[in-house]
Length: 212
Image 1 (cartoon, one colour):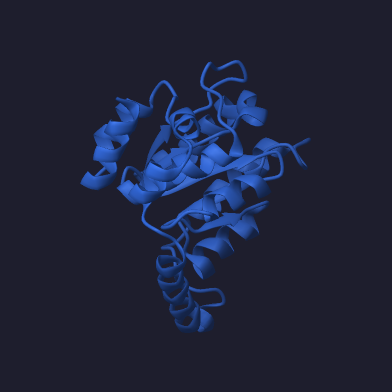
Image 2 (cartoon, rainbow, N blue to C red):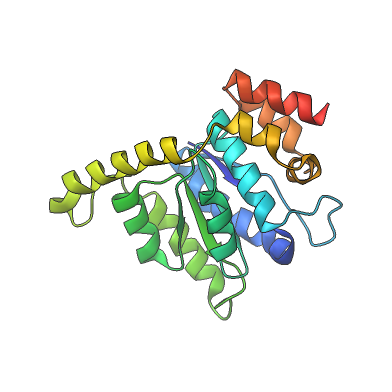
């Protein structure tokens, strides 16, 4: 699994801790973690939580990653921005129980965490335990297990609803404010990571057209 980490401007100073914790948990399980920034609070490329949604949706819909880990002060803004787009199902995850149940019940492809609210003593332990619970078993297995079939059915229904209620990603990128989109793609490693991993040729072509 390719995992993209995205942090916005208010919480960018915590990026190194989040990235290192995620790598420590995910890499021994065979997953690859790609850090799309922000990398520090004073980065030239500043990401708002709205731009997190644009970047996350572009990565997921193009196949450049399989899972997005993101967040903001409360996690709410990042979650809402991600869920505004097609092909993204983002859960708000505060603790390890949230993480496990999201993987088993909702089987989404993004999580948004609060990186300010409740971020106190022991925060790094909670972060580690959250990441651990993401990977303890195959996603979509159901919780409790006897609810697996209806939960899997509901997930498929939701995926089909999102196809109807959202337009395609290329059309979205074409119609969004160009400066807003370019800001979402301005991170120092975006070009390297995106073009090495993206699979959807239409989205790749649109991104190339936008960034020149």
